[in-house]
Amino acid sequence: MKMGAKLVAVGDLQVGVWLHTASDPRAEEWSASCQNVTAFGKANGGDFARFRALFVTDGGTPDARQRKELFRDALGGYPAKMSIITEAVATSALKRGIATALGWMNPNFRVFEPTELSLALEHIGIELARFDPIWECLASMQLPLEQNVTLRRIGARNRMTPSIAPARLLSERPHSSGVLRAAKASRQESSESESESARRHPVASRSESSRARKA
Image 1 (cartoon, rainbow, N blue to C red):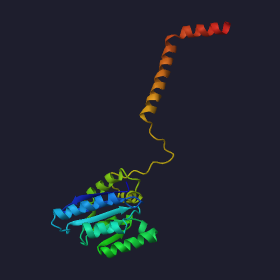
Image 2 (image 1 turned 30 degrees about the horizontal axis):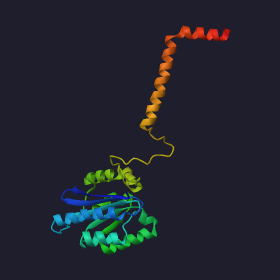
Image 3 (image 1 turned 90 degrees about the vertical axis):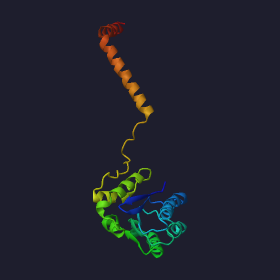
Image 4 (image 1 turned 30 degrees about the vertical axis):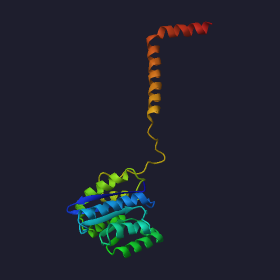
């Protein structure tokens, strides 16, 4: 998986929440997220006044066809308020170009740094105090994806809980499998059995050792 996307209710608003890895989204994943937006529009008679969007990405972005799929096909050209939180625009000329193209398609599209969470939320009309359901959604979408650095920085700066755990260090030992644990337990039981046998027959053990020395 390269991304996660869900709709989250925040007051009377419906927020489309996207979480992207550093890789661009697959066609089927992106289409599924756009279908959620399309379904919202159908349920509301084509009115997207209550729809907002928040993207958190390590650099993954939709291509030209996928951008059309969201802005033209799903939203029908409606200029929904959208915030994207990323560091990729500041570090990549290519990503800056894509952000510019998105701004042409939707004048209400804005880009923010991970340190600007409150500003990103303000742009889509949500107070920081009401961010909890969005954060919980992001945290749940992170589980099957590769570690999202942008999301971790947002959480650390704003002391959000549940916190996003750091990626496993290479020096950390992996958890033992069930087979390894069973083998370890078997060895331990065998060692304990031998120790118990020696305690029960100390005289015989010493006598046998004595005979062996005489021989």
